Length: 477
Ligand SMILES: NC(=O)C1=CN([C@@H]2O[C@H](COP(=O)(O)OP(=O)(O)OC[C@H]3O[C@@H](n4cnc5c(N)ncnc54)[C@H](O)[C@@H]3O)[C@@H](O)[C@H]2O)[C@@H](O)CC1
Ligand SMILES: [K+]
Image 1 (cartoon, rainbow, N blue to C red):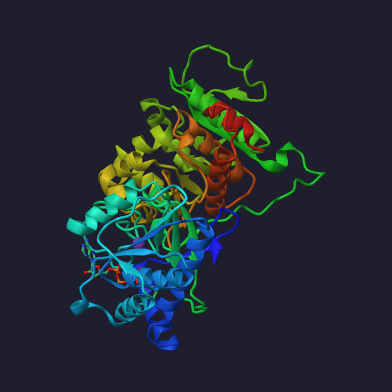
Image 2: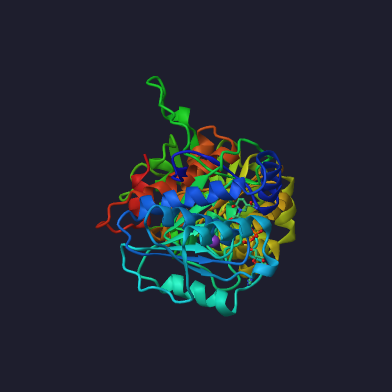
């Protein structure tokens, strides 16, 4: 069993791939063996998480997820923990594995009761209501058990998935359990790490149930970028040049944030071409930045971050930028301009040089002609659709940022937290991506590594210090 942390990459499998592995594993190991392993793993983790629990309440649903809970109850009973089980199944319609675990729990003397105990903070509640078979919004007793788990003073350990969370998309279309821990069985599911998954699953643990079999993964949980030392003999030209095109009147700060981020992330030289024709000189704030008028940029040898407070004015520059930029990050206003203009969409599709699009869900929805709700309902599918439509790497921001490109399984970024929900952090991310592109990374690597570094900075941010975009930009190293 492994705790899932951002320190290494993991393969992710959706429900179809997991069902395929499950069928093969059951055929190889024999009936009930997998559920026995699942129940034992759950009971062990329960004991490790709540060694001083006086009470363990296990809410078991009608299917095999409930069977895992019954199996765990049997072990906890043998270990003297006296679990109480609320079981929502029907013996007449029970699958054979769950029926076997029900019999074992009964034989062990587990207490079955409809009454929920008063749990304290050191106790434990286990969500064994639904897993992969979650098919529709919960109602009735099931919804009442979900509400009871969420109201409990004790931490909740969810088996396989928090009940209500969709394994493939990370969405919940009805009541869902908010767990402190989730033990994912046989495979890690993408939905645990994007959309609502990160909030509902809490700390994720993984047990492969001794199954060494593999099928192609649907996505990857990204790991840290490889450490790359700077050679002593390098000079500023070795790390490439970035230009930021943006900063329309009143939004010049966005361009400065992206430029500062690129600079601190290691770009050799950083040019800022502000669309604000005003004369305010920000050189005093960031003396390393080189200010240019947009026409002066030698786009064909620059990694360009375009958008970044560009306002509607950025649209006029996009035909040239799309045709010429050696590498390109399109963010914010540049994405909105593309969404509004089919000519720019064609130019983006025809572009052959490395390109990263960094939309948040609303920008993605505009580009796809859909809605934020539709994008969030299946973030992986939305990112894949955008990548296919424009032939570019797409970095879809949000909880569990998704990076994808045509012909490749998406990566979900494991770092970051709600502290990044503050003005300007998107500009900083665009600057990071541009710095990676300028240093010679592929568009895919640049997007994955920048997203990881951006989130990791927020995850290790000192508790008492305000996370502002400008401080975030300067913290990159
Ligand atoms: N078959 C096996 O031996 C194994 C199964 N495993 C466990 O089994 C789970 C999958 O089991 P199942 O396929 O039985 O699926 P679940 O146990 O997730 O749920 C299926 C049952 O719940 C009902 N249901 C679904 N949504 C409902 C709703 N909203 N309201 C009321 N009832 C609803 C279904 O009609 C079905 O009876 C996995 O998530 C995992 O926890 C693991 O133990 C590995 C081994
Ligand atoms: K569950």
